[in-house]
Length: 393
Image (cartoon, rainbow, N blue to C red):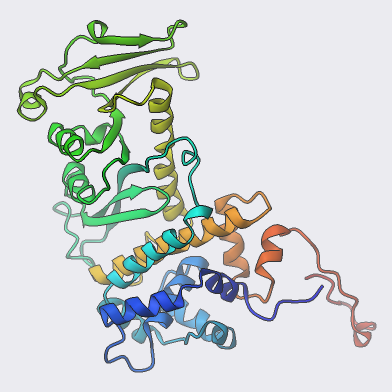
């Protein structure tokens, strides 16, 4: 078998094909202004190397890149000492990597569509947040409580991704109003009960955005049985129309009608109540939308368990957000490789495979499709009298 002449890392970076777009963003943000040999592209390659190899310090990143200098030439990057990389993470705007992230979903949109894309013509978003704890002594800007620090990532997940980073003490409702400000009209937003807020319901309805969420148990509303619209003959679900009657609800949602889907889950032997402002979605569609919200929980699990996002190589807010956005880029690239492969990869196994083989000279396409193949080679003649001879690939 003919061996690849460039590393899997170089294959992965070249598969993006977005270096011109990256350079355009560098010019936009002027991130290479007054740079002395270490470009923003090299910084990006270093932080992507950090995510894919699981390096947890600047020294690990620097040592790993310097040990692979020749292999970086294929992607036009240079290694740098830890002080140079640390200075770049601290001072070069993280908005460069945020904007670059949004270039990738647009380019590969047809390859990373979700499972609901064929059923719903409108874009479907899942809204949630996760908190990343930080040491208050090192991250003084991330003050959360008296003795705790942290940041909260308010996330809007579709085929693409939107982050809004705020201090951990900012409520989910405030973060949601900020992140949903520019959501396109006609979209569908799915969120959990933590986002039950009457002013948010009104704002989304006025923008022409459909929402699906769980109804709170203590919500005050008109009786559901009187608003019955449709019911399953097997008594597995019911669709009702209702309006909120509480004091706070009337300030924002007066004269507004909502729909509630009561759904019986046979696996857990429980009834669930889903709230929506849509008059077009059927009861099964509402439940499928809420079930698919679990994808955002899997995203948080992937980014925390498989990438470097809980131990940071910098302490400033700019350095932390640079690391978070490069983690998002790494997740998108790994997911893209997983979907392109003909092999049944799990995301976790694929991330570990890249971690172990990142700088080896192997064909990325061949290894993604047939990772278990053995490369048998006949031993050289000079090794016949040796105790050991190379037999594996």
